[in-house]
Length: 413
Image 1 (tube, helix red, strand yellow):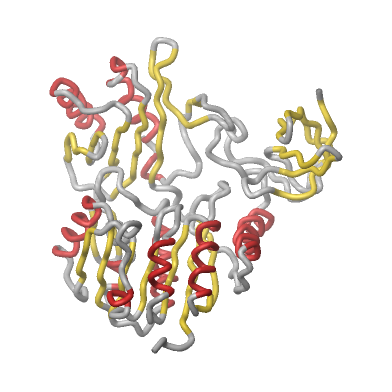
Image 2 (image 1 turned 120 degrees about the horizontal axis):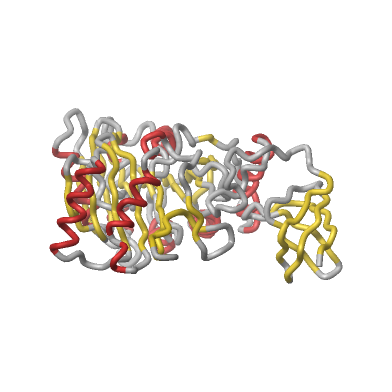
């Protein structure tokens, strides 16, 4: 049954929220100030019609918007969208009882996302390849995507051809495709180990598709050219499927914020360093100790460091910082620490930092909730949060990243 609802505000995921006598109702793709007709199912509703659109509403740039689950905010005008994303950071800090200046959002979309994951399922006698449908476990076929970088124009067709080659397994697949300076870098997950026959078939397919590299579950099937990414002065070949910032512009902007926060540092620790996007840029003017839990990422970093001239010394250590965080006596030897943990944050490491004499911490986060939790621990340990800069490299999504700078007012004795 249809209901008429008035939207009062936006939720964290971008859903419009209506206040009713029965409680809040979340309406995807509705905006504050709008009157809408919707079909309600508990606290969620499906938008049927916009009776009175808001001034902040604009036309979506993609015909698949609202059907494809990849974007949540193509209907928002730019100023409204930017304020909504920034407010996520402000709200998360306030809920944690933290007062700190929050800068205007940094647009880091650049040329677009350089990595994309397609899902493939055997349906109707063939392989259906695409993105997850909005709020569904189904798939929606995608021929082109406006938020991807130009280097990924071929990605949908490449994903379809590779999935077709593996259709006989009848297994659901995830195909991660990354644009590199040498061409497309593909890592396929979900199939399990590849036998000799499949490896040969995939090698031949990689040749026909002119792929730079093709891997399965991180194991390289064929590398025709190193899939290099430029990080500062270094040309780095990340491990298959390894972490990479979503956009090249995002990596540059975040690295610049990190560097600007520690202008006088001489020796820093780069924790959760990945394959070195911050390490290589910082090493142009200071010594860097990179720590990362993934062995493949550390090997990529070391190979690139050995081939790059004009850098200060970079040392590297494979270490699980969740189980074995750097201890106080180790931290005290650095002028600053950079943290770039996964979504779960870095609680164990932050507790050690809070107990140390370390002067400066630059925290790069992809989750405002875990950042706020960890920030509260640092503040309780004597740090002040100097400021936070939100960075948007996932345009039209609800996702926001940030860089926070913490300083200790007085060195502990």
